[in-house]
Amino acid sequence: MRYGFVLPWGDARTAAELAAVAEAHGWDGFFCWESIWGVDAWVALTAAAMRTSTIRLGTMLTPLPRRKPWDVASQTATLDNLSGGRVILSVGLGAPDDRWWVFEPDPGRKVRAEMLDEGLEMLRQMWSGKSFGFSGKHYRARPVERLVPPPPVQRPRIPVWVVGGWPRPRSMRRAARWDGWLPNYLPTGRSAEGAHAELTPEVFAEAVRWIREQRAAEELPRDGYEMVMEGTTPADDPRAAAETVRPWAAAGATWWLDADWSTMEPPVVRESAERRLRAGPPRPS
Image (cartoon, rainbow, N blue to C red; front, side, top):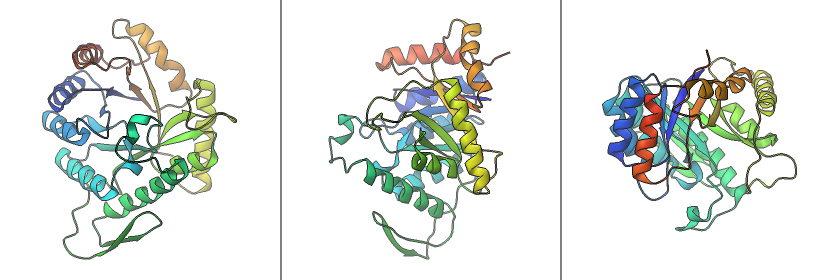
C-alpha cells in the first residue's frame, strides 16, 4: 500500500512547504483540494514540484465537467514534464454543493456525467503528443496538425483516478476503464446528489472484486490499477493510525489518503497538516 496526504486548504507557499515535509517523512503522494474560485491547485502543485523530487502530486479532486478539458490537459502535461512524471489526476462530476454553482447553473448530473466521459476522452487524445480532433455532444475541436504540445512524461498517459459510485453500474464502469477508483457508496434508493452512505471494508472489498472482474472482462490489466481509500488517522497515536488502515488494506486498498476536512481555517490547517505529516504514514506492521 502507498500513502498520500490531502491538503484541504492553503496557499501555494504552504502547499510547497508541506509537500517537502511529506516527502521527507516517507509519504508517497501529496494532493491539494481544487476549488472553482480561490487558490489554484495546479499552481500550488507546481510550487510543490519545485521543492520535491520523488513524491507523487495531484488534486483531490478535479471536477472535470466544470473545467475546459484542454486547460486541464495543458496544466497536467506541463506539470508532469516539470516534475519528471509525478502527476496523478483525480476526477469526478463535481460536488453537489450550492457553492459550486455561483458562476453558472448546474446542467444536471446526467449532463455532467456526459461531459466527464467526453472530457476524459479528450484528455487521453490530447496527452498523446499527436495530431488531435474531437467531435462530441458537449465538446468539439477542429483537427490540430501544427504546434502539437509535447506529451507528458508518463506513458501511455498520466494516471487518472475516477470517482465511482458503488454499486451504480455506469459510474463504476467508468472508473474501471481508467487507472484508479475513488469510492462513493450509493446504496439502492439513495440519491446520488445527497449525502453518501458510510463505506465499510466489507463493501469496499465487494467493489474491488467487481472492478477486477470488469477489467478482466474488458481485457484490461489488473496490475497498476489503484483502489483508493480516504480517511483520517491520528497524528499522536501510531498504533491507532495503523489499526485504522489495516482493514482497508485487507479489503484491497492500494492507496490510503489521509485527509481531515474538519480543519479549513488556514492557520489550523497548517499546524494540523504538518503535525500529521511529521508523524509519518499510518503503515500497519
